[in-house]
Length: 118
Image (cartoon, rainbow, N blue to C red; front, top):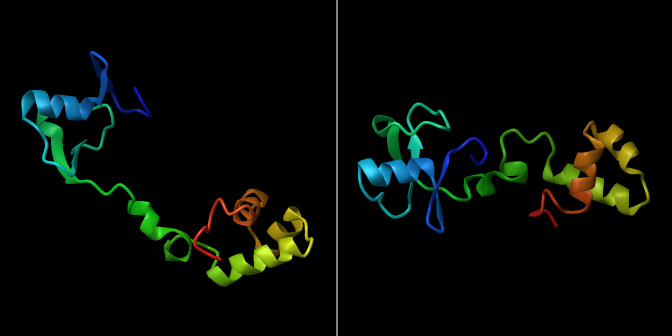
């Protein structure tokens, strides 16, 4: 298992279980598509539950920072956080001021998150 998904080892190759089951019982999946279970259970390998879905490898990449509808901070706020830190404010003080976690402030200042903001 890898993150709840079954893994099948064939010789030196490792395949995710759903792709293996699809190939065995249905055929080769089309290029650019992934196999998932329609029942949404990660370990499910039942052939009747396997469906082909379009692969979107960077789906969340398009929704980073301000483009993420769940984001509580704005681009302007992130810039202000970075200015405060450059001015010598502590991470805890910044987190309290902007009502976010110290870890989030640290990630912003180290550019682990909001990487698209200059």
